[in-house]
Length: 521
Image 1 (cartoon, rainbow, N blue to C red):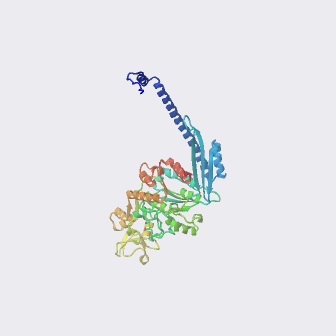
Image 2 (image 1 turned 90 degrees about the vertical axis):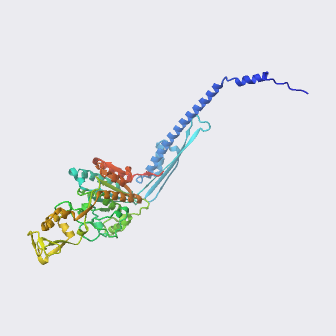
Image 3 (image 1 turned 180 degrees about the vertical axis):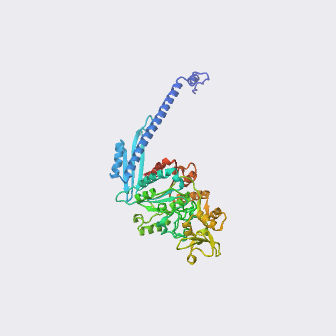
């Protein structure tokens, strides 16, 4: 039998294996080569990613610009040709894979796609990377409803109407910007309502004909709103709206005039409802004047009401009477209607101040004053007695001036003849004595500023929740009222806290946002 020789532990084979295992010559070279390859691949990856992103961004920007230009409804060229031309001019025409345009009677949508291969650097198995981009844009001739709420309070007239004189041209330019003509042959409308405000807001004779105001008097069309009214955008014209008192607490005037009463009654302070006439709107802006306190809450409530579909019967009535263009029949449109934009712009130069209100006893009914229909002489009756103080004679008599023909004057008529202070001092106090200031103060109450701030926030929140786009402008507020205006807007980006000289830029920015095109992807 053949037996293999025994392998001894100190044999030549064992020694050879041990020497091989212990030999490290050349190991560093192999490790170095691996490192070099790794660095080269990492650098190549970084450069490849840079080239990829650079080309992708450039291609995306080109398509974005192309589809924006193509969707412009004022564009007279073929929309697809516009996209192709943009791509060609940017040197990427060969990479355009798709360009489509669809349009209807009042809209145009454009989309484009492109792809290109980017050469990679030192990436084994991936010589190129595919860049694919898409873009789309949409423009429609939208029916736009705008409520422009403008502060006409006394502070707007400080320093010789400094702020008012800056507001007027800025607001006129805004009207021109948002009232641009629609494309020929395509429907679409822009209707603007202007709501001037100070202590109160006068709805005006046009709206008053179609809103059920209470019947204490007909000297104004101002409303008294309750807290709950500011939690909803709707104002039902068939519900009786409490008419605010007609009175002047600011002066001693007799008779009162539009510059002193809490609710000014001249047409320049009336709401301008749903107008498509830029010149008429600008004339209304030019006619504004400064005077009174600040009631952003009441003004904003009216502004939102002009945008709410609950007021549609009012507009229908104005269309039927020929006072509003029939082109906007059916407005205010429903909130969920397609191609409809509702915008509220509230501009003020400060914080809310007190809103004065006549107490109930002085809003209607007979006053204690009698009038001689022939001479106009007034007499004050003491309670329910038969004693009358003749203001002309300065004495008490058992009959009023005018005798049996004397007419008892209603409170609304009396407060049209004289201010509250005039009555308290020169009528009541003259007749029965006492502190005329007490008589003055007992005739009215007020809604305090803190409550008006909350009401403003409430109605603005309701408007935003309904889908109304809200912008606010604080003009020289110096911090007073800025918080309320920002809260009304809902975000700092929609609130313009500006110096007076910047009012034009603020209105211009808002107008641009209303008119701008928006990318859809």
